[in-house]
Image (cartoon, rainbow, N blue to C red; front, side, top):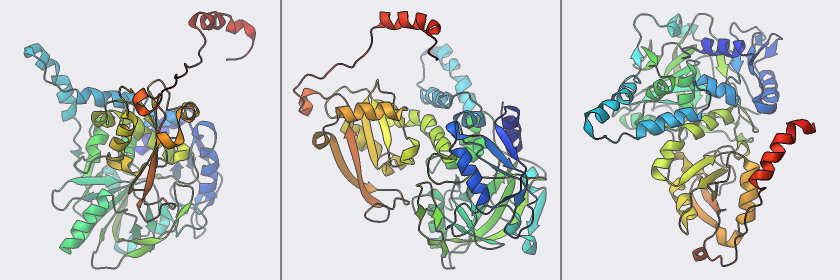
Length: 492
C-alpha cells in the first residue's frame, strides 16, 4: 500500500495496534521527550506515540497533536516504505543496476518494464491549492511558538525542529536538495539552520553567499513517510531526494510551489516553514543540543533564517523525534539506509557480503563488514575503499570479518573478530575526516580511525600456524534433536 500522507501512516499504525494515543496533558518542553525516550528504550523500540494534549511553553494547550517514534521499530520502518523487509528495496536497486543490454529483440523488450519503472519516479506538480496550504500565516501572523516544537533536553539552546525536510536548490545547476538538519527556534519568526560544512545545503548556502544573494529555504514537517525518510538518506548531491522517494513509494511524490519563494514543497506536508537567509547578516549562535552521540554538542555559529510564511493542512499533526543515548528512533532510520544502500556500496567494493552499524556505534563510530576473502591483504583493501566512500569516510572503527559471520548480530561479530585479531598485526590506523559531532577527535572534524582485520589469515599475512576449525554439531545430530525438541518441554 502506498502511503501518501502522514495521516495515512498514523492510521495504518493505529490499525496494526502499533500506536499509543497519549491523552494525558504533557508539556512540549522536556516532558514529551522523557516519555518518548523511555518508550524508545523498550524492547524492539516500543510503540509509536501520538500526544493529543500537548502543553505549550506559555501554558496553553496546543491546537495540534504531536507524533513521535513513528519510524522507531524494524516493523514500522519497513511499513513506512511499503515493504515487509527493508532488503526488498536493496534487491530492487540491485535489479536496476543490472542493466546490461541483452542480445536479441526479445531480450531487449524484456528490459522495458524496468526502464518504464524508472520513468515513474520523478515528482509531479499538483494543480490548485495543495493540502499543505489549506491555512497560511504571513507577516505578523507568523508565530512558531504556536506550533508544539519540543525542547528535548535540559541544556538545549531552545526548542528544535528535529525531523524536517529542509529544501534548497543549487544556484548553478538548479538541482534540488532535501536534507534533514536540526533547526533551532529563536523567535516567533526566526530559526537557526544547523548546516554542517559537509552537507549539501551548506554548499548551496556558500554559493549563494559568494554571489551576495539571499537564499530561499523551506522547512517541511511531516509528509508521506518515504519523503521524510529520503531527507535523511545519504544520496549524492545530483540525486533529487523526491525522485528517490518516488522510487521507494513506487509512485511519484506530489509537489507544489511555496507561497513566498521559488521552491517546491511536498503537497501533502503537515507544516511548511518558508523563509530566506541573508548572507550579509552575521551568523547566530545555535545550540548546545543533546545529540545522537548521547552527549551535548557545543553551541556554534550558523545561518539565521527569516520566516516569511508558515502553511499547513487542516488539522495537521506535528511529527518530531528526539536523539540521545542509543538506542533511539534514529537507529531505525539509519538501519533502513544500511539495508537500502548495500547494493551501491557493493558496486565499488564487490567483495562485501554485508555490513552493519550497531546502535551503540551511533552510525559512524563502529561498522562491522563481512567479505568474501580471496587473497592476502583484502581486509585492508576493503577498509581503504570504505573510508573513501561518501559518508563512510567518517567511520571511526571498521571491523572486517569473513563472509559466514552474521554482522547484523554484534555479539557474533565481536566473538569472531576478537578471536581472530592479533592487535599489532591486524590493526591499521588512518587519518581523515571525522563526524562534526565527534567530541573526542583531536581537532574539529579531523582525527584518526582504526580498522581491524578479523578474517581468517593467509600464510602471506604472516600466519604460519594451523587455523582452527569452527565448533559445530554434525547435521544428523541436529536433525534428531530438532525432531524430539517439541517433546522436551524446554521452550522455543
